[in-house]
Length: 210
Image (cartoon, rainbow, N blue to C red; front, side):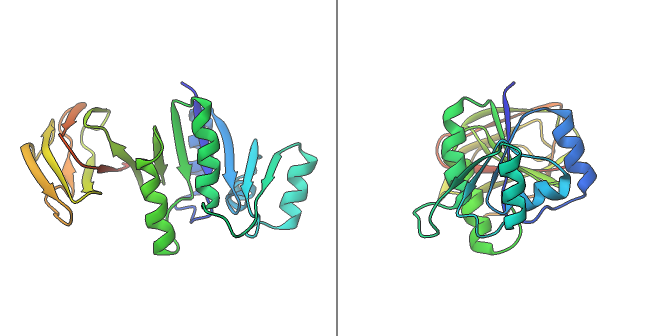
């Protein structure tokens, strides 16, 4: 499986050890958007590329990257896309099976919501912290290795129609989930393979680790 990790300039929620183990467990190419470079410096890791206006990363780190042959793509501060979206546009053309965003949460709420919406724009995209995994749900999806874990489903459209949940403590059958409804919060997987299907809408899944 071809994997990419992208470090954003949000908060690095969790321990340094967690992220080092995550990157070691499943090897992949590492990229960063602007201030995501600060997180990589903390972890002692160099990326393949850094993209952005570079207003959130120190000159010392940029110089270190140049000396280590890291590709640096600098953009003007006034642009139509966030630094994170710019690099995801680039990576999404490279046929990665899985793209994991680290440091994409926390901080300003407008940044947080804008970042989370990216899971509906780019395929195979997931946000990861030590506590949770956040991803979009396809209209027909089988989720594995969830038994015993807590998972919430959040509508990101006016409604999600025909929602069916199988393999969960609280199943649903052809339910219409409206934006703002809380019925799908804190469900629990009771099987190793759980099934989620729906007819129309946009649905986010949030799995709590541990």
